[in-house]
Amino acid sequence: MKTNPMNRRSFLGRSITATAALAAAPLLKTTLYAQSARPGFPVRFPPDWNGSPLVAAPAGIEVWPGVSTPLLAINGSVPAPTIRVRRGQRFHAHVRNQLSENLVLHWHGIISPASMDGNPRDAVAPGHSYEVDFPIRQPAGTYWYHAHTDGLTAKQAYLGLAGFFIVEDPAERRLRLPGGDHDVPLLFQDKRTHGETNLAYEPEEMDAMTGFLGDAVFVNNTPQPWLSVDRGLYRLRLLNGSNARVFRVGFPDERPYLLIANDAGLLPAPVEVTTIMLAPGQRAEILVDFSSLKIGDSLTLMSHPFEGGGHGGGMTTAGMDGEMEMPPQGAEMELLTFHVDREAREHSTIPQRLAHFHPYNPADVRTTRQFVITVDGMMHLINGALFDINRNDFTVPFGELEVWEYINNSDEFHPMHPHGALMQVLERHGMDMLPPEDTGWKDTVLLAPGETVRVLVRFDDYQGDYVHHCHNLEHEDSGMMQNFRVVSHRNPHRH
Ligand SMILES: [Cu+2]
Image (cartoon, rainbow, N blue to C red; front, side, top):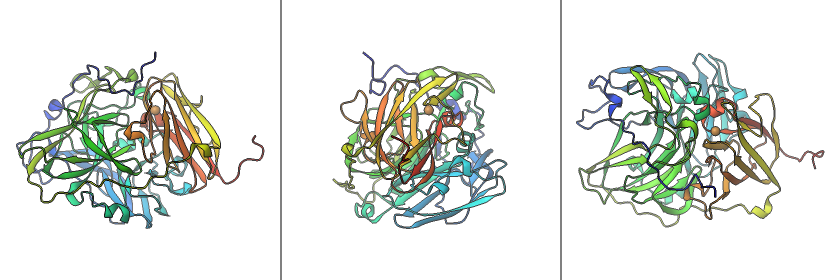
């Protein structure tokens, strides 16, 4: 019998510590870093976007104190400024490319007109700019934006062109979820530092297969990150912005916490979980109550080990000081340490109900579309083909409910992401019940090696040309992407 790679059985993964990661960093005190006896650095937060043009340009960023690291920033910030928009408002922005290469930005999970969605065809050359202007119609949620340039997405996102896009609405506000500094956006990205102050994007041949896996997880571009908290309730907006690494998020003792939102907004009600899978591109909002900890205690959020790491196991890359092994996909990793420093000023209550959710009716499905993922050399193919920016791969009738059936005939994880609509997971093969992270509105669905997953999807906002791709960014850049066209009428010649 085939074992289900998504099960929660642990194996004896290599335990990864990041303690050596900063050994070479000069310990200068700067304005960016509070002086602290604690190892690592307090998580920093990008500024909120102020409506000015989003200017992408190279920048020297002080990731480690006293060291200027060459990255790609938007308005000088890595992560990019946090965009906050209320439902019903229009999102209007100018995007300026001051890089030395093409650029287009994608508003991930935000349903936007095809011409403004960040199609790789719409990338602009250095020195050029473009404008987007469209209404935000979807519910409150934690979305994000990142570079989506043909063949350059992985590099540009890794080097900094990614940030939060948070949608708010009155219904959510009425829930009185933790707010202010108790509402914390956390962008998790693993980085290949080689134990040094190094953030170069230098993929090797094998990385087309496995994706660019790192040796340390940064939060909001902060290495060895920690967050000072009080003994209250926190809303943590988790975004896996890694190029390739999947996380199984939980606490070391697997103490329960509450999942309140997945990719595209709040769940009907909080769900108690101990670990959740969080793949590149995906978001999860969780409530964590620190009242059971004492002042002076620490608690580390981690990625628990899991199976199905494909070919990533034990890969070796050459660092400047010789050989260093990257933790394989599925390895245990530390994500973020919370230090409980103060009593809570106020105590939020946890709502019993969060949001209305109308599940699609599978009886309304008109078409089932299959996506079979296979391997060809180092490349992953969808339905036997690599991406061709000039080829339309399939046509979807506007407004009709479809089943998209993903069949993963490879040894790697693939977080699949169609642009232009949200999804509902219908079935994960081999599971009687969907795991909590598959519930609610999704825009990125994780396929474990060998898995078949069915989702329901309906394109009922805009017509036009969108892309559908794997959110392992090295897979995407090496061709694991399709063009599709949403049209208002069925092709009369098709039966
Ligand atoms: Cu993939």
